[in-house]
Image (cartoon, rainbow, N blue to C red):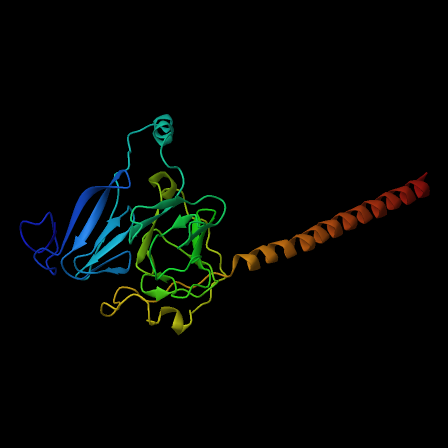
Length: 286
């Protein structure tokens, strides 16, 4: 129990006496932590309605009465490298997108090298089920190194990270402490602790310095407002589309190869001139 009452397991003085409760339940064949709120709070920057229940995963942040509580999992520190490797065997080694609230509660998809699509269609890698607020092909999740990107595929109702609406057809970095909302469904990025311990890839400096105002605007059909977003300063700046990055890299290769060829030719010419000079000196003195 979380609240201001003395009997609470975790006390937050500015919260209600019994603000929220966390239990462990069997969901989708696995035991998971579930939070239920009796007063306003946010999980992963997405408001949790009073009386609603939501799965929580490691790395996510719970906001109660202005306080931030990060959910962490115990990481073994006294295991050898061999023991850690053996522990990893048989467990999910890849990150997963998990439905933590909505009709398809507990459904998940592993995020590998390719794009994982999410929508209200059995053809999607992650089918959110009977959620009328979700398009048949709503969004896709892509892994780029140690980073994860989410891209709205032109959905009718939009994709929200926290309370910020993402721009259509533009990839945005998805940190593990944020939740994504589509229709009545909420998605979490579940990353294994041994993967979270790997340093993140250097950020790609292709984001707009200031996102457009409409990216974070409340729109009809979007999640309901739950007061000012005091802890969220601004929406994430979107990354450039993956196609642009690929085009830039592809276009850079010929230039790099041309430069190397130029240096080689210049070096060869210097060697020829040096050999000619040595031959001339030999003729003069011999």
